[in-house]
Length: 312
Image (cartoon, one colour):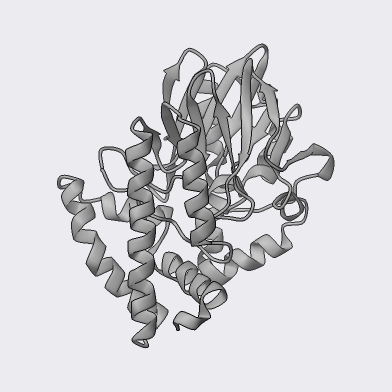
């Protein structure tokens, strides 16, 4: 069962149960001026929980007028094509680099299958095309007047080449998708999700600089919830991005395989995460559901080989 939390009079956070766990995937719902915006609705296999959550917040799925996507990864946008028939008024806002892969999901599915293999259906459910006439492509730099808010769109590559964030300057609220990494509730550890094929360390560092310059009061993460110390959070993310990257390149230089590096990285980092979680036995599982060690290492390996082959 999904959990709906009212963050302010016109803002809700939805906690979608994913693979039997809560506090993993978090869409946001914004209302105002007879409009209803949904940010990062998640995969198709939790869409019934999404619809129930929208109703619990006092609306109907058919009331959705805008679907805002930070990027097109399946845990954020995999269910968009499937939920649109229940949202006939909704228009989908997505970065121009991601839009073609929603209209024709063939390449998106092929790329994801390389990572998830036979577990695709179990993890994400159906992945359906989005009609081209329901999509509004955005590049970054736009100002969206939606649900009574003025939302700035900023292009934020690093995690993905098609990533954007939505910033309400007036409220100080920055909806960051995965651009600010993963930090689960009550754990002071920001994990870097670095999936292939688009992860780029230099671009992500520049994105972190941009996010800090915006001076938000709070970061609303997709994984998971609000982080009310943005500078500290982003500094932690940058530190871990670099530390994990250095560890992976050293292991590559030592001739280790992706599987071996994943095991070593897990052994190296899990005790720190568990200690910060203060005994929560499920915390490691939930972090892994947001970005597994193998996927993370695959992203780093591809990055080092593509951008810095001289170091290998």
